[in-house]
Length: 316
Image (tube, rainbow, N blue to C red):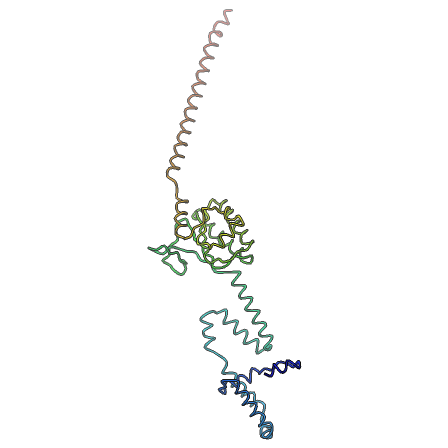
């Protein structure tokens, strides 16, 4: 009501101080009626009891405020933050310390800035995992959390747990290339992108570069569990064609079956190559014998024509 009436005359907003609120709460106040009672008591004290409080030391008043404010410190919540997130715990400690040192406004501003930087760090360096297949199951889980999850031979499965945007697409690309460049052991890379809900143009360019790098390395790139809107985005940017229309799968198990078949040596092809090589060797051997035979026949023919002439020439 005071703010409504004061707004007509351009007054400052009416509010209560933090310390007074703390004292009110520690006294057991449950409703705004406590402020009315406190105002009436304060008026009575100012009118009739001022002389009794005139010589009261200020430290006593400060002690009353500190005792009231100490009840607002929730140490259990600090313990909970320590168990839940060490980063949030240190931000809360920084907010508390800076508020005491440089004031409420500046302390809150710095604390908000720290929270924003922490959120940016989590976004720029998101979590990803290498997946392995659980025994007797079609489920693929993080190999660090599930030691029994086994990686498939020649195949690496990577899960990216964040949107792919301009500020983390380099992390996305470097992560894939680092895991794929494991000598000749890795033949196929499967990207499990169920956690991706948004991609921008920079991310699409990075995905095209990854596809081109896999093609140059003669490795198979597959994508599994990509959401429909993201697939439409890749199709509109023609990234889907650069990867391959048959390289997208609705489940990771289907992608692994395709990859296993793609990287498996083809016995028929190897036999065909061996047959061709054998035919080529036989052909070279035949050509060698024919050439040697022609050379010998030519030499004999020359000797046949030149030998009689050499014998008859002195008598002439």
